[in-house]
Image 1 (cartoon, rainbow, N blue to C red):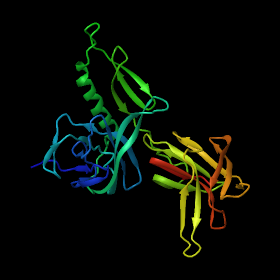
Image 2: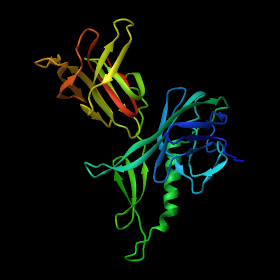
Image 3: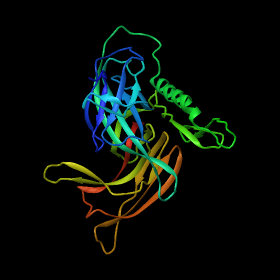
Length: 332
């Protein structure tokens, strides 16, 4: 019988199949370990966890560590390869609900640029509870704790990389984007450690959105866009549709490629020009506009998009889209 108390189990489609999180207590640290299993092949993939505490504080996105040996999955009672994640005192520092988002990333080579990139293979969110306990001080950072676990594992395995040219092994650190890359003397990559993006601790305005997917923004308003983890956020054109009978409003993303992509925290203000109907009219309109980002003014021209007729119930708007998490703050 498995002795694992905390686990998350994904199905082949990348959705949570089953999970169980035992009682978590405020101030606990270096005791609670979460194991992540999956029905798909996790070899060569990366697994991360991000947390949102009951007080709104965000911790992560931080790499989980692949276990050296398969563990018994409590859901199947069979041994499976898995990742693990050790919880620090900062994650368990607030009493109440604790949201956990687990992601698997798979590496692929972009056919256009020929450069390696990652995409989300699986995503799942669950909510558990942190129970009240006698408070402690000096809560250990979960970010640093799990980064050190991964770096220590890399160091232990380093001796397996032998430079056949001179019979020596060696290593050096390089920075690639937000990642720390461990290389041997021949510049071959030995391992990569994902460094999480720092989450804003001082809010620049009112937090009006935190999540994934779509968020519609208003014209002539100022926002601060904050990508979380390794995600980027795209500015897109949407069609707003309102039912004349029920008043129900829906939005459809009309642009495939974003007008602009945000990969770091940026101030944003937008404006759409008056749509210009095609001639002869076939339901398409020419869409253009302008935006200000961190004080830099720029214009955009999307071109003709099909809306099927713009009225008081249907018209173009701007919005944000990302497969990863991001925050939107309203300044005014």
